Image (cartoon, rainbow, N blue to C red; front, side, top):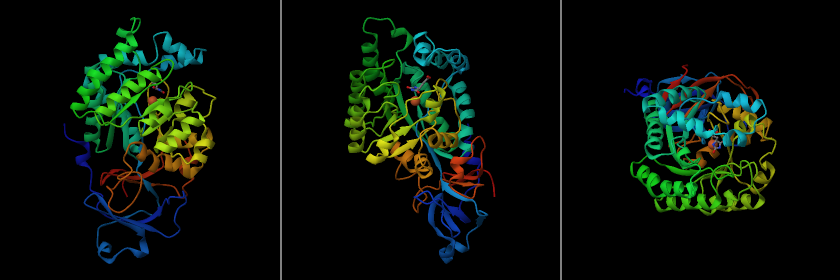
Length: 415
Ligand code: DI6
Ligand code: FE
C-alpha cells in the first residue's frame, strides 16, 4: 500500500506571522516564526530576530494563527472490531459498568468482534477513527492491544497499530495490554486467571516483543480485571524484556496499583479516580505521569473525581487523553477532552494544554522529540484559527484547525 503520508507536501520553509503558545499557557505578543528544514525545526523565535539566511526560504504566512506543539494522545484503544452502542443504551436503562461486564458484555463482546475481524478490516476501521484525531492536530498517539486476548489476535491489533503509524506518517507507540480482561475460554476455569497470566507472561509478551510489536506493557488492575499480584507478574515479565510499564490504576477502586507501578518505574498511571495519598507520593518519587481520562469519567457518569489538587500540590505531571475505546470513551476529539479536563476536573487551561502536549509526550517516553516546539526536534506543530490559548479549552464540538505540520509535512489544511 502506498503511504498516504508520502503524498503530502513538505513543510520546509519559514512559517511566519504566528502567535506561539508559551510554556506558561500564554501567547507571546510579538509575531513569531518557525523554520523547518528537512523535516526538522531549525529555528523558532520572534520573527524580528529571524536570521537573515532564513529570510530567503519559501514563506508560509501564518496570518496571526495561534501555534502549538502537535497534540499527543497518550492512551487509546483505537484498534478493535464492532462498537457497543447497545451497552450504552443498557447503562442508560440502569445497568452499571460492572453489571454489563458480568453479564458477558463489556470488553469481552469487543474481543469477539476483534477476533472475527481480519487485519485489513481492523486497519480500515481504525484508520477512519484515526483520521478524526489527526485532523484535530494529533501528531503522536499510543495504541493498545487488549481486545484479542490470544497471541494471534493481539498480534493482529499491534500490527495494525504499526501500519497506521507508517501509513499516516504519525508517531505511534504500541502498548501490549494482554492483561485487559479474562478471555472467555478461561472464564469459569478453576485457575483461569492465573493460567491466563502465565500465558501472557510466558508466551504472548515474549513472542510479540521479539517481533518488535511492543513499546510498553499495560495491565487493567481492577476488581473486575486483574489483581495486584497478577499485575506484578506481568510487570516482572516486562522488566525482564527491558520494556517500560504503565497501568490502568484505581479507576473503580483503590487497589494500590499506582504505588506498585511506580515501584516498577512506570511511565504513567491512568484513570486514577480512586488514587490514594500513598499512590501520589510513589508516583512523584518515580516521576510517573498521571494520565487523566475525562471521557471515561463522563461516559460512566462517574462522580468520584481524581485527586487533582493533591497531584498538583505534589507536582506530579498530569496528562489528558481520549482513552478512545468502544465501551467507556467513544470519543474522537482530544480537544473535547481538554475542555472536559477543565470543566469536570478543574484543570487550569495551561495544565490542560500541557496535558495534551509536553506531559502526554512524557507519558509515552517521547519527551525528547514531541510535545514542544524547539530547534532540533522533528517538525510537529498545529496552527489554529484562534487568537488566544484559552480558546483551545473553551470551544467544544468544532475543529478550529488551520494547518497541521506532522513529521515535517503539511498534513492538514493549507495556507
Ligand atoms: N479501562 C477502560 O476504561 C477501558 N479499558 C480499561 O481497562 C474500557 C474498555 C472497554 O470497555 O472496552
Ligand atoms: Fe483505557
